[in-house]
Image 1 (cartoon, rainbow, N blue to C red):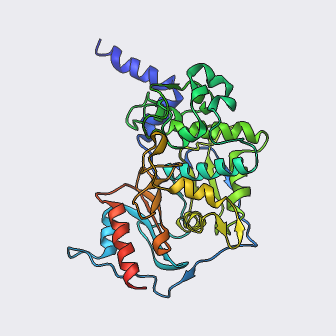
Image 2: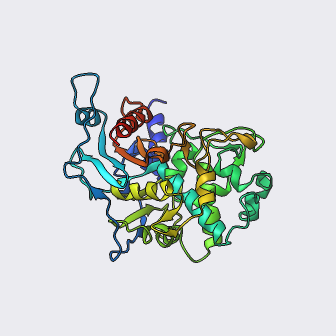
Image 3: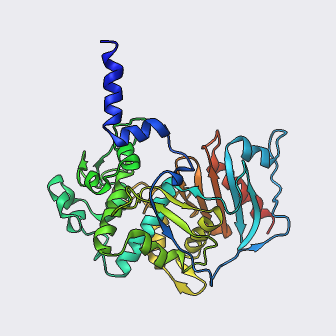
Length: 366
């Protein structure tokens, strides 16, 4: 029996690509863009936007102990940290051999980009209404109760979805979606565990449903091509980027995660939302969509701290895109402030508290 158990384990691993990859790579890493197939996001090299730059780009932030702010960031596994105030880079630093040109996986920050694309699809009349049932666009899910789940409820994570978000379980939904190669099939297998519209339950399956809706309504165009058209070539990104897909041939974007880009370009997405969807005079997404996506609201069962795939951090209007290893695009409209933090690990830090402290420092230096 003792010999049989290891044999069964090896057999299971060898017969499951998903479990095999989970066992080999063990846990999500910011270099995972190197192990997955992907689609390229091309920038428009003739229209690059540059933030203004302060000569030193070193905002002095005093710590309670003897450490410098740089020690604080490095001790907590940060690889990139940007503070942009009034369109000027006030602080920019990189750690552990990362530089401005280094690609970093977004993880769940990609959810906010997916929300942006849903808003674009609505404005392009590819989706009729945000309150349309999911089954209108994915008929296969009707039998699972998704005729009673609206797109808005999926955006707000109030769909009642039955989804195991554990990143430690190789047989759970998260591993299937992250390491698996059958995203369309796996998404169509999803079910509900409770009545929609009652409470918020943050699970990545919701965002992948949004990705499948986009896949259906875009028809011949990929989700990556749509993001390139609607955002990447519009806002003057400094670098090309990519979006990881489940498989090389006819793959589907992992819209719940896995947008791979540079910190400076993530900041430009924050700037677009900071300016209510307007980029230097061109309205790329409606002001109404940005406001609805980022407002503190608890109607219809939604959480006041979470709306259309954005985390709402305070009553004063601050909000953030957030990824599992402490990836952040933090936006404060009140102070015209954007902070990007990317890390190899989350660290032993209250990052929102850190951002709010920085916000206070910036406010005093006006």
